[in-house]
Image (cartoon, rainbow, N blue to C red; front, side):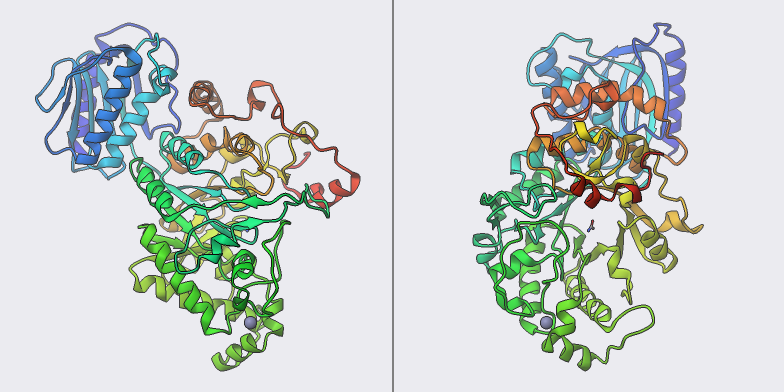
Length: 570
Ligand code: ACM
Ligand code: ZN
């Protein structure tokens, strides 16, 4: 870190020399690890750019993209080269910092950016863009003060895994929209998209060896209306081709984002069973689910054919997605069919599994499935991650646990020495209502999670001392049962995604809701420039105009069980 310290000192001296007052507060989300703002501004539009020789190639592309964008909106083209510049922008390699770290110094003499890898340079650019007028995100020439304040920033993420889950199964979002979400993630320095691609209500990933998964499994004959015992009867669905998926993987990589696909097993598999009924305990018939919830029909794991199927599917999945981790789900797998299935019971007998005080032998059968799939994935050079149910019974070393049923699964996993990603529903389920005025909101899943609560999440709370060593990261989950349109999805995502980005990135103890709230005024301009729908509750407007607000019956309200929800109505 030494060279960075020297540059910071130079920046401070230079800044003191200039007395121009800042025009407005510096609004950067997520808040950088260390930032000093000094008086004065440097005009960057048209300033010459030097990219030092050893800056990585992908970073050179990102820098050129930024310069082209700046030229487009400002109308001033800069000279970009690798010779030293005066009063310009210099990008330098610094091998002493981590791959996602960067130092950004702005003085009257110009801008210097130091990083060691693509991500660091890319994040420095994101920070610079947030210090410019929001029109930098636009697609046309705009009037603006294309200067950035004198700052000295040394930035580094708190967590390595900074995730967002997008559920494209309950409702299907096209590739172009997924790319827009990736753009937003990049702005927020988030680096893992957990893509939920298989479900009871729809299978969304083309698997060449099993074409019926998308011919049959990608479509349902209706969608449940609110929580009622009826569906709309309209055929609904869609899927991504392997070509589209590879394109999205590359698009994400250009933004420092790894896509982690989820193939949820052995539960949440009814769309696969509808396509290949022989994979179930009863043999069906099954149909792609039209209603939400946890389904009794799961994969029959007494049959070898089921493992052949899973291995074939995962082989194609691993070929499309180069991620270190593959998410194998593992949540909400009822054991009722296994208890009655002669094949599953024969497997239990053969394996010598027994009930214990804590868990049934069928739970241990799920452990067997997890361990067997884990070995297969490990043998292909990858690792597994799964929901906290995989911890019930026995979990083989090397698995990573995603804590969703509150924080206790994560705490238990850490106590047992596993790495965890924390996505507790109590803080990270951004499919929950974000205002208390539910009667003014489109119908959502029945809990309340305002932005203040999301922002206030401290992942170390309740963790053992060594927790931070095992907390690989944090993730917000956007489930899509009640998000029938792109507008509904974006409305739930924003602005809570901005809040989670500070939980994921900013140093422990650095959060300050008032500062964040002020920064959101600038971020809101970015949402608008990029054409996103967002929840305006913080700006005094509740609801999503033009979207249906159901008249709820008392029966529906009862089903929602509001009273049991934490943070409610206190
Ligand atoms: C989950 O929300 N079922 C992981
Ligand atoms: Zn079975």
